[in-house]
Amino acid sequence: MKVVAPEPFTYKGGQRAVLLLHGFTGSSRDVRQLGRFLQKNGYTCHAPIYKGHGVGPHSLLETGPEEWWQSVIEGCRFLRENGYQEMAIAGLSLGAIFSLKAGLEWPVKGIVSMSAHVLEREPNAYFQRVLDYARRYKTFEGKSDDQIADEMWQVENSTMPSLKELQTLVLDIGRHLESLTVPILILQGKLDEPIYQESADILYKTVSSLKKEIRWFEQSGHLLTIDKEKEEAFEAVVSFLNSLEWES
Image (cartoon, rainbow, N blue to C red; front, side, top):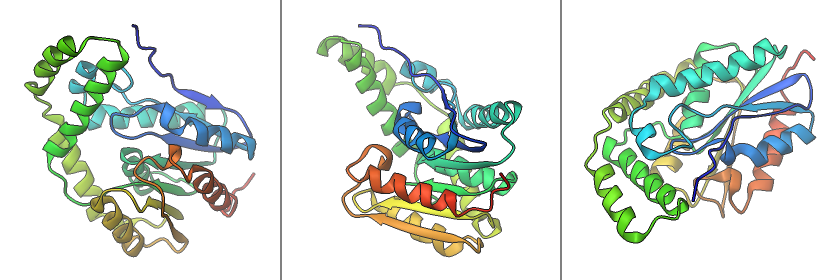
């Protein structure tokens, strides 16, 4: 069975724009429901897909953080070129890291950080995510267990040097959190891994933003945008965005 690759999306809702960023091994599907909710509340949303994501695992193995960040830049450029001069950024997991990076480098109205981690994590932990993604992808293709096992052996014996670059990126963002002054909303699930919960506290305590808020979701794990409390998370995002000092 052929797997239909996800596409970037743009939902037009108003002059205030939000760049939506998915996580590592994820795609625009992870933030699509949030995008529709924001559109209904007057925001235009655009969600790019990082290079190598949403397609076969071998494409992912051949890419890295610099190319993924370039996809974020292109998403920002898309909104600018289409007349949206005021922008907030909302990101999930790796998308949250990129949102923080954008807040440190670009003039954005605000940041929504969902399930970010700013603590050191070994490249092998990231590679396990790649393996999980590869296994799911091959299952969706309808391949037999024997074929999946054979192809997974190939993936397991592959290398992905860019994961060391990803580790460096995360640690670099963590070292510069005190320089972040942009308004920020931090959302975190209580059922997520400890490293993400610890990171949420560190992020809240360390950033220098005068306007900052942290919200915890008792029944949610890592993918807040598609978990049990997604509606509450979406409402929190809209409330935060509405509180920002937009010019239009």
